[in-house]
Amino acid sequence: MNKAFSAADANRRFSELLRTVRKGQTVIVTSHGKPVARVTPILGDDRTGDAARSALIARLRTERPANIGRWRRDELYDDAP
Image 1 (cartoon, rainbow, N blue to C red):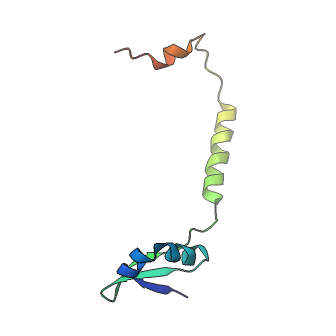
Image 2: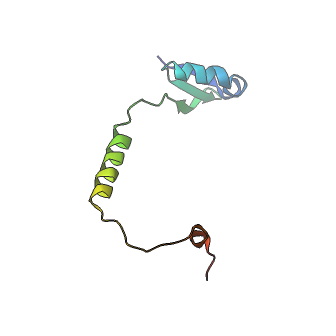
Image 3: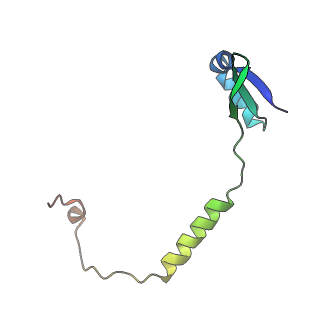
C-alpha cells in the first residue's frame, strides 16, 4: 500500500518518510494534490553487480602481466608534458 505525503510534509518529516520507505512501502509525494514523485525502496537484488564483478575477475585472470620494468613511486606522479 502506498502512503502519500504532501511536498511540504515530506520536507518537514523527511526522516519519517525514509523510515516508511525502509520498511518496504512506497511513498507518493504530492504537490497541490497531484502526484509528482514516487519514493520506492531499493531492492536487495545485487545480481547485476555480482555478474559484472565475476566477468571482470574472469577477464583479469586471462590477462598476462605487463613487463614494464622497474619503477619508483614518484614516477607514478610525474607531471611530464
